[in-house]
Length: 259
Image 1 (cartoon, rainbow, N blue to C red):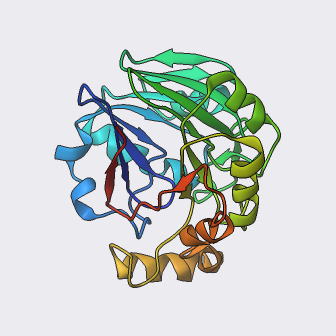
Image 2 (cartoon, rainbow, N blue to C red; image 1 turned 90 degrees about the horizontal axis):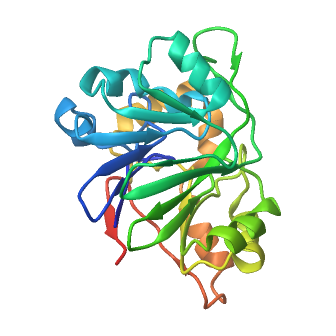
């Protein structure tokens, strides 16, 4: 199983069968996403999309994805799925907490997250989009992965670990709008029992950005992004004495294989 990070909180998972699944599409304003992963050729290969919530930095790439790949199935929380249906997205599968969808080589189960959710906040008044979610992804004959989505620390993580036994966790850890590195490290130490943890929901610096121009524009429009730059390694510092879990920092546009 391979994990490709496309910037901020967007990832592509490639299964042993070669199928690709994308979490939280965010393209045009994403300074971490390399241009080669925004082409119709690449997007046409995506078999399924999983949405954690409706905010623009998790859904604004849906239009580009639909144009390149209209048959791609979109999993979304119930209220968000209804909104997308009203917006003309035809292939949307609604879920709610505890619900699952089996793609064949990966089973996706929606689990709770503690975070707000709205849709269209850059276009006008935000539309209520249900509650935010995370996912447990059970990959066929390999790892089970917990993707926290945008969330604060919560004791539900212990239940998720006990029930689904993930070996990999992707945890939001940027602070500002989600838990920060300290809270994410506590979750690893006290609530989860994973072999690998991947920090998420951060932004690149000028040196690590795929597009410096996009980063500059994003910082001008949303100065708070500056509080979430280069946070990935901070969780590693907090977990420096924690031997049970390896912190895997994935660069923007980098793909890592987990056997």
